[in-house]
Length: 458
Image (cartoon, rainbow, N blue to C red; front, side):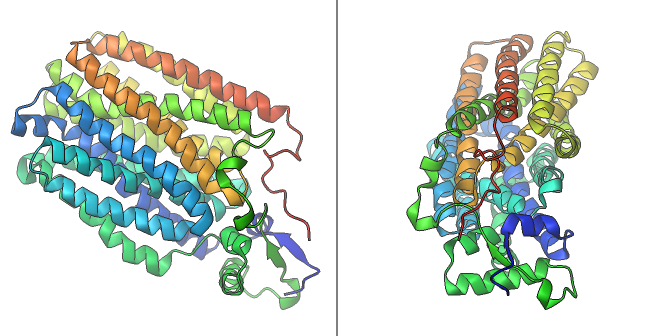
């Protein structure tokens, strides 16, 4: 390679057509988030079956949901910085393996206390897996199509969630809730050797770490991305942005001058939207069943959220590539808030509930996917995994509090419509936070941390 012909790694990826190698990476990341979605959705649908076996009140399930979410938070906080230091692929594989083992332990739990502990460690594994999958997918996607490609990849989460709900609703009577959880544990364990053999490390991370072996691997990866038949004279020497890994703190970079307000607004947005997501997916089946809707119907009605999220993620991703992504998400959250109010005033109409849950999934579920894509665009390579993971952790904190509050509300006998009316509050706050991000980005010059393609000089 010619040292006088240098190019930033992200500019290089942007300059090439999407290769089969990159498509394979997106498919593997799709599978990672799909097993996450299967588990996350499935445990909510299994709540009534667990209650029936152990004869516990609905409010007693709150620690179960809360433990998994606490684990997700801990996993994101722990594995995000580790991925920025030791590599996305390595930490992703560790996370998936931990998730699979803990999920099998959940299926074998002899009582509620053991189930809660196992769910915590399942969450720790999941908390490290999804942000790293998003980060890898983002780093291998051309910038002009990043939102579309990563949201398409992230639809694995909603498809996995829909599948988790379907399997739980249709087969829990056959294989039991333990059987459903066992399926959710075996799948990630089977995925680990596939990732080891087929998933590459982040090209930007390899160049940033910069050992001779890393540079050789990076060269081989770059050759698989390059247009076939490119003349050797057209090759370039690639470099990554930001400082060497051993001279920086990925967490400190989140609060660098000019970036701290972005980080805080991003966290506020994730806090609110994931509070809504987990309240709906964890407690809506229980609330509908308590209102007299048969469990199978309640599960299928709630599954419409995942269907809407899948469609919404794809559509919103395309819109984010074509216009201001912050404004696209802000408007989506605004519409979702209106639909939440409409669902609350539906007076029990199943048709209205199905339609509004589908729409809420489109806007909130799809917007959550868009939020993950957006979070990766604010930070450089040296802190990108941390930025995505800690934004996710902020969202998980909201999910923990929301799920625990959901258990309290169910215990107090709060009605279906009142429950939904309360959800309109975080919807409005998420809308305002995203409009705030739009305003900040619009008033920043291109040289600020918003433009993460700035690079080190020789």
